Length: 527
Ligand SMILES: *[C@@H]1O[C@H](CO)[C@@H](O)[C@H](O)[C@H]1NC(C)=O
Ligand SMILES: *[C@@H]1O[C@H](CO)[C@@H](O)[C@H](O)[C@H]1NC(C)=O
Image (tube, rainbow, N blue to C red; front, side, top):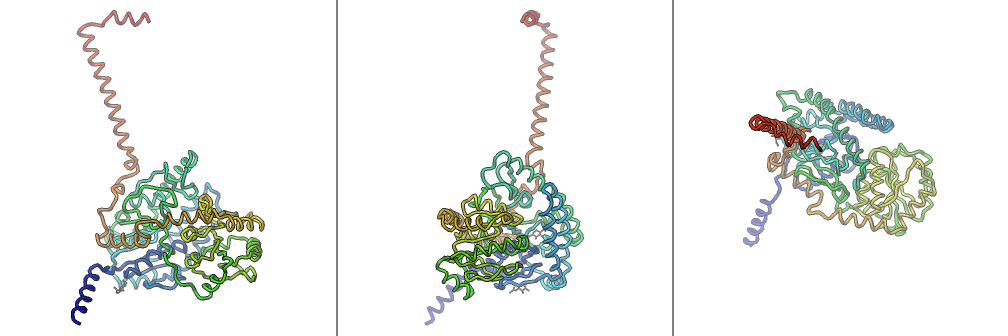
């Protein structure tokens, strides 16, 4: 009797030595974009499951049920939500040559609004009561300002970015930028850049570099107000202290790029490897739709507001006339009408629906998250992109053969119906997306395991300063070896000049000693 009990205790002891020490982690996700927060919460979900104590601070109400984190919702930032959308609209509607400028103005205004996070009474009292954190996880959207919180808690910081890293993001972690083959704009195709693309890419890369450089000085002004020295380290020091950047991308999606150890791919972190059980009505609906289900959603970003009412009517008329069942996500959109084959819902667990075997097609606005989820779960798509990066996500998706893209402003009932039938009936789309899914999932560690491993690594090694890329200490000229090249050219020039002087000197010496060889001179004249 005693022996097994001792044995069990022994086993427990052995297990517990391998067990994680729960860390206190602060997640700061001050964005109003649900597609960003989904990615951030993917990391939180993995950390909570691993047993860490995570506190999440958001400026947005979270819709999903809480899975075991502490949540602080900054009510005082609520009004910034609509402001953000209006501001983004001014960028979208600006002519292309004014976009960078408008974007800069909007960014500045957004910083002004967001910089008030530190004045939220709930956050102030929270900070008073809690003064120990092992790590700050910052949802990144050009908001280095918020890194001041890591400086406040004197702990390492890790950023989460929701797509591929642009030039500025690589620079933050000291990853080399190579605009010759790594695209730095969502408008440049990930593969096969031709000369024109490389020119455009280079221009985009330089313009983004200049804008973000100017922007940083704006950020610094706010930083200095909220985190004054000498109480806090300087903006530049805090920024340089970033331990890791996670980004939501995987090389199988193209492009392939070189990575320093601090820039880590967690593509698909928002996707559950095993779907959660569905609400009973949805489960039954999906199970009973043996003829197949079309899942229709234009996302959660108020995108639907940009689609005209008659387009909705048209979509409704086509979908209601199909022999497939339809799950339609309503979002700030007027109810288009009832049909026996359409199930309307205002909230849907997309990631749990897409893996169902009866889902045959996803009609999407082509947000990065939705496209990735569909690709992961092997569902071909018809995309109706609306704004931001959606048109380029959609184009890339079509180029990979995972579905078709339609322009919602010009499509007709016929073209819409044709696209749906083509993707449903032609097996190549399904086959392509299946092949891709296999490549995407084939990794040494899942996205969640990767994120957890590296966060624990940073905590274990107190910020892991040995991982810092030396590139962080170099300026633009040094980074591109311009100083070295100029130095070598100068050396070459000097040695050339010196050589010339030396030869001249020797020559003159020779002439003086032996006189000018006359016959050579006369030979030369004859020619
Ligand atoms: C979890 O973190 C919160 C916030 O710092 C803290 O108040 C709480 O005591 C922590 N719980 C545990 C079990 O450490
Ligand atoms: C940098 O991070 C370390 C922990 O990783 C922390 O102790 C230190 O205070 C931070 N320094 C600055 C300047 O933020």
